[in-house]
Amino acid sequence: MSTYFSDAVTRSLKPLFEKYGLSCVRSDEQIVRFENSSVWVAVHYDSGRSGELGVEIGQIGAEDAVPPFSLEEVLRCVGVLEARSIEKLATGDERQMSDTMDLLAGLLRTHAEPFLSGDGAMYAKVQSHRWKEGSEYAIATVLKRAREKAHEAWTSGDYWGVVRAFGEVEAHLSPAESKRLEYCRKRAVRG
Image 1 (cartoon, helix red, strand yellow):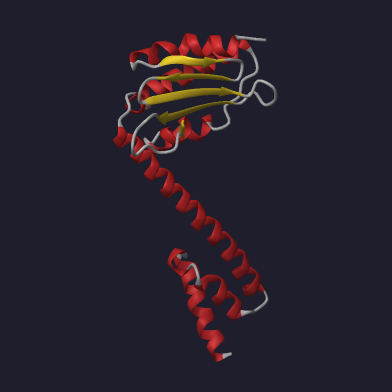
Image 2: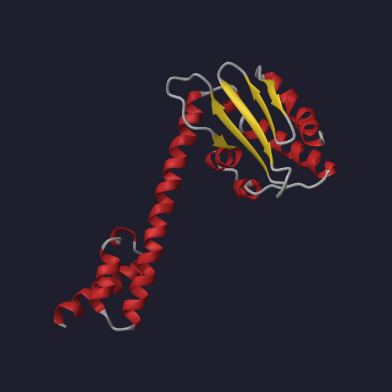
């Protein structure tokens, strides 16, 4: 069994985690987990297939504890522009693993220390951000389908079809789409 993953995690992240009283409670070729009385951090590695890495941060024992977050979610919440670039972070060899762990340590040190210290307000902020992103995604998905239906109806001259497709998402339409909807309403009534 190779230990380069757990060795790299320990070398790069343990000093930061010890600052917050986090100690290693599990270490193997796929996960290294640190905990204190209020916070846990798990670094995951898909050693068998993709080589993907991930970091999760969660609360322990808080009455209002929220579900754990990925480091990517934390970074998006605090406005780090390159947050999405770590979503599918992968590595395949020891040197890459070491460099990647150093990168993760830097990101955690710079942007996630309030989470490591158990700041409940920051956990609530990420939870709120997660809900906001989920709502935006749901709206975008419904809007995409409505646009597809409206396009099909428009190209076939089905004004009522455009009205049906856009009517349910009217509040989210662009100005041009709103004008098209209004035009189709007038044509459908005459029609």
